Image: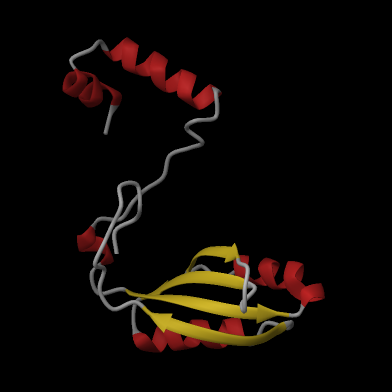
Length: 130
């Protein structure tokens, strides 16, 4: 939403909205801006969560290799049975299979488990569309 549209919606001056945004940015409350795909753009794409067990000494190298995979949306360290939780998106099941093969071939990965997302039942404000 543009600053002008936001100002109209809030019934305040554009400069008021701009000043407030600048304060939120400089204080670190707003860390940046991003593009969120709408449901039309995401439709037909296959999403999966990939759980990885990684050799402890290999984690830095694994993360470096994962960054090179364009279809990787996010990677999180975790506690528990798995070391990393990945979110990946692919155009087709064949493409997803290739991505999983790429991930599995990274040195230092001991095991993986993949969970394919079927349908979204709950979405909280600020989270991406499925």
